[in-house]
Image 1 (spheres, rainbow, N blue to C red):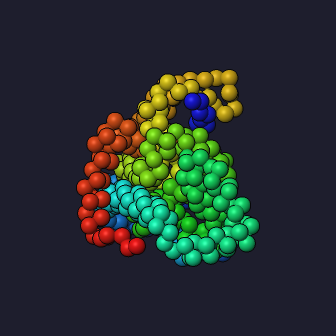
Image 2: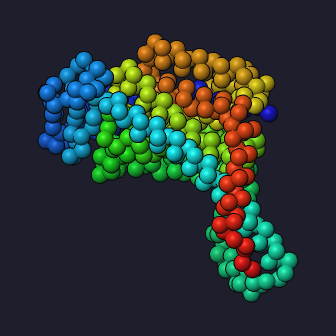
Length: 360
């Protein structure tokens, strides 16, 4: 099995800048478009939270207010890390519980459909549905297209569609204040928790979303074939939020606030899992197909680069988020899929009792 890899993952990104102020001024919200509506507010040192003063940057705090929304870029309250941590744990657990319920309901629905077909129940209703499908040619076309997709592509298609939708929302000027608040993860912002999740579906740069979706598509088939769609989604969603928490933790420790967005943290979790499960798989860079290397070597190099970026303070990508997602992928490859995922059977038993016997 040969997979292709484009080595571009979750960016701060470079095009957007390392701080939310430069992010807005240079890329997202052109100042000329908001002339007369941008106010610069300066905070005095007396207005700061002295309890966390050591975490404040040395430079003057200059948050920007755009259309009434303050974009915090100069102060990180370390106490917010507890909120981020609790949200990360709760969301990750909720993700796996949610996909477990989805898996159970899918199996239950298929079993009941098979039973009803065998007993010839609801024949008239099924016949009406069949007639409607015959009259709606577009639905048949969509159904045919969907049935031709591989299991990995069926999982990839909705994820890609959501990312494209959010990418389009960034292009609507009226939505940009809301996008900055909820679709860009920033430990200095007032809204901390949900942006950790929503930012994993958020891209502003066309190259950024194209590169991330290409890498996800390349590894989706192998991951879904190994994990199944439910476990894959649990891993993907959890890795994205854990990557955001790693980014928050790093920015708080080094006192470097700023926005980050992109699916690369979640993708790094999938990439690390696949490369660990299939270390001898040959990969290549899309622009250099003649250069091949093993998946095991690739994940070591990528994580080594991100570790160097964290230690040396590089700002080209959100290296801490990369490492957070990759480390969770490694954890799931070596321990989670063998020890944690089987525990869902206990929950399924309780869920089955709560649901009760199926109705015929």
